[in-house]
Length: 246
Image 1 (cartoon, rainbow, N blue to C red):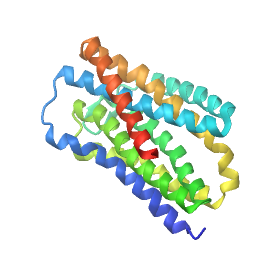
Image 2: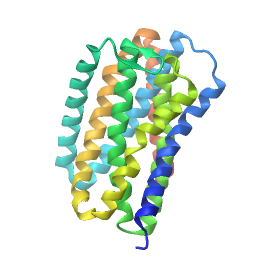
Image 3: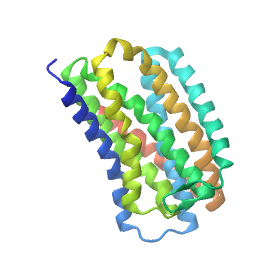
Image 4: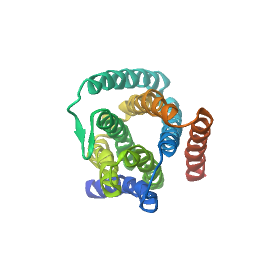
């Protein structure tokens, strides 16, 4: 294959920048009620659950045991991290303080961990067939827009500005170019790690979706609204993935 380190870095950088596009719809939304906050958290949870399903399926196709191991460890690590963040009353993220800042930090941290696995996936794909690399890069870039939307659905209703939400979304995906290059240079070493990384990212996102987003959503909106929003988010993400693969 004729790909170089520079091409791999630029391709992965484009996928990272695409995450910021998920915040753009909020340029047209000026005010949000408590019910919309609950619905937003529900949609974000559905998007994360849909993304997690795709990661588990992809990882299991490579090595099921390593994927399950990553799934469990990822969920446990985020559970511990959540407990540690909750005791930090002085924590702040931009305009957010206290509990809001803790949730924002947890969401961004989890999506950052998730992007490491995606970066390895990009790098490994460039170490093989050129058509596969093009498909993987394009699919992740489009997928990242939905992930940026999920992050924005959590941050913006809490008062974070649109441009800052876009910046945090891009920041969460910056590990992609950083991990894509070494994965491309040392494909043989990184390829066995990929299923564990995919499972780890899925476990982390599932915990956040259920333990944080849904918990808050049920406090702000009727259960029927939350359930509907979760299903819509889940269906949207899975439909999105099907269209990308077809």
